[in-house]
Amino acid sequence: MAAVTIKSEREIQLMREAGRLLARVHEKLSQSIRPGISTKEIDTVCENLIRECGCTPNFLHYEGYPASVCVSVNEEVVHGIPSDDRILQEGDIVSLDTGLIYQGYHSDAARTYGVGQISTEAQKLIDVTRESFFRGIEFARAGKHLHDISNAIAGYVIPNGYGIVHDLVGHGIGTSLHEAPYIPNYPQRRRGIRLKAGMTLAIEPMINLGTGEVEWLEDGWTVVTEDRLLSAHYENTVLITDGEPEILTLL
Ligand code: MF3
Ligand code: CO
Image 1: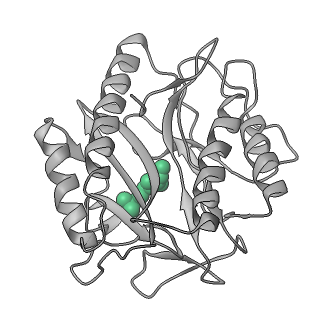
Image 2: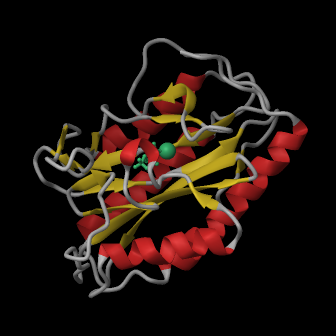
């Protein structure tokens, strides 16, 4: 795999702006979540929000992906394709994963939301998934190793009894959406690369209520849980520094 890039101070400024704009897109997009909206309408809102701030959707046409946001409902883990026929219902959970390009620099972030009232079981899955990200980034600092992050995420999720998706991982990010390194969310025996200030990483636990095993649907994109139980996703683009990590996609 290619070497992990270290961003210059100028590049870090651009990554910060790409992240800040994406955080605002997510915040505004979250307001469109309600029973009765189609996943296609969510995509239209998302694309407009990204273009309104002078940015480009990085998912659109990525390896042929047809939309600006992945909208994954209930047992869909990631890469759900927006559709006029898919209408959100009260009690669903929905993961929105989107990103943008600002002056050549990419940001990437995902959130899972409840639609109206959801079960306590669904809410706990969402909360544990989000918290696992924060457990992971306690180790996202110069001098730690990449797999310290993976082990911290897994070490929090496993005692909660959930399944960790192995077939999809986080990634470096910068002038491309996906850069080295891969960032697994499950336990690692090797420690992985040593983290350095100026690395930018998209850390993204994908956590299932039941098994961590997943399948790809016939559309070639949508990833679903093998047992069709719920899945949640939480992702931010993070800057490694000598101290606390900077979460670029949170306001
Ligand atoms: N957010 C996804 C990731 O982190 C990227 C989605 S790829 C797309 O890897 F093609 F669906 F856009
Ligand atoms: Co990502």
